[in-house]
Image 1 (spheres, rainbow, N blue to C red):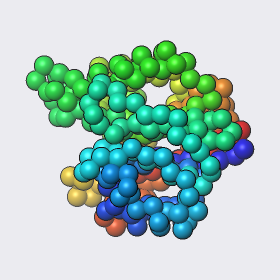
Image 2: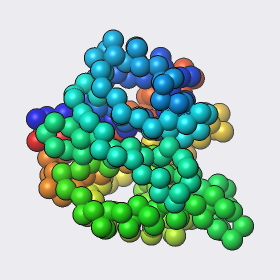
Image 3: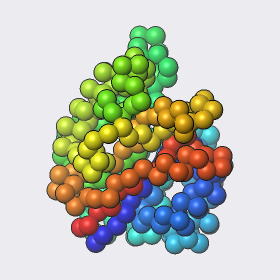
Length: 262
């Protein structure tokens, strides 16, 4: 079974319902994983998505904050959700396709502005969240699985516009990168995006603060698609839909795509 998957931090699914529909109609991924939906599940505007063929959804919602959802043309069933670090946040949901592939959709905490857990509780929560992700996947030893989402870390030097200038900025600090690498190693995850696009600057997020984000191009690759080794070799066609960052009233994230031939 061949399918295409996309992941997108939508920054309010209700506010940007039209943008989700635009993506679904123009790009037509088989599965779309959304983060930061900022909506209770019952208020996610599914009618328009269903009209476009996305008749299946699993989700975890929260009023005004967080929230993750998996929209799909393909039948799927929910197989769980975890509240890592016991934050009480809707940051993870997992679903399984009929071919046995499990999709984990994550929204990792951003971590605030100061990369020091002694003075910034949010940064400590982020590190704890990643540590519990690591421990979970070390125990579970996932197979035939895909992990996507806004992981809020740009791990490689070419995942940010300036490695040197961002070393002390939350999302690219060495301790965050170390924690993310630990998660990856615990599940033997393969970074599908960089498997397909191994070299060069690559971003999926550009700050709202930049007046001309496109020309300034001070981006970071915060959004990821990983797969377990047993299916990673079947992945191809990875891309970032940069144009979506320039749509009307956009999210500050762009969708990331990958296809799998299984």
